[in-house]
Image 1: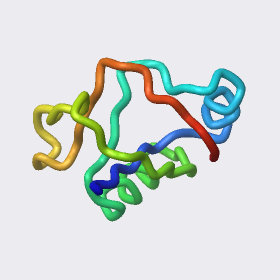
Image 2: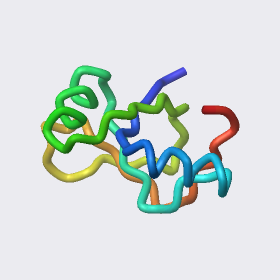
Image 3: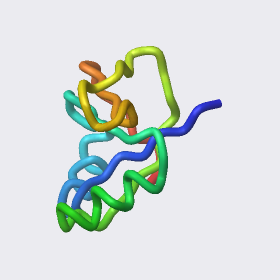
Length: 78
C-alpha cells in the first residue's frame, strides 16, 4: 500500500477533525523527506500520513513527487 504525506497547520488539522474530511483539492507528497522540506518552507508543522487512492493524480512540477486529488479525503483518526 502506498502512503502519501499531507502538510497542514494545527488550525487546519482541528478543522479536519471537526468536519471529518479534507476539502479538495487535496495535495500530498510521495516522500516524507519532501513533506518535511515543504513543512519547513511554509511553517506548517503538521504532517499527516494518507493512504494512496486512485483519485490522486501527479501534480505538475515538484520533481514528480507531489500529487493532488479533486475529491474530499475522509479523515478517520488523526
